[in-house]
Length: 89
Image 1 (spheres, rainbow, N blue to C red):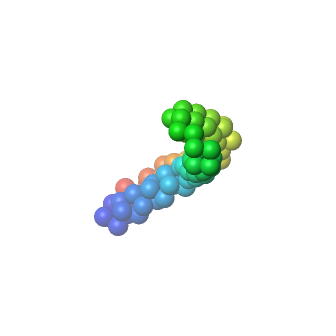
Image 2: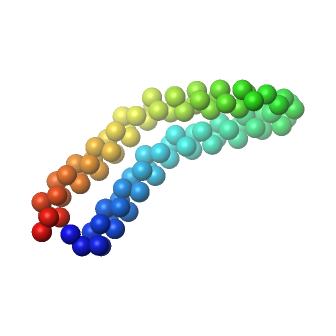
């Protein structure tokens, strides 16, 4: 196994991690911006008003995107495991 192979596997792992986490983080960002905009317009400075909607959005996004996320992770791990024999040489 060469250093290029290890680097490529690491790059693929980071890319897969970013791909899988993007929907949840993106939705959390959008909900946070919407709640902050609402707070700025109404001048309500309640800490739980920012926390609760984000938690609910992350929970809903996890339920919604979990099948797709698991499919991506399973495909990545299947690729890694099936390529083990060629990596040993």
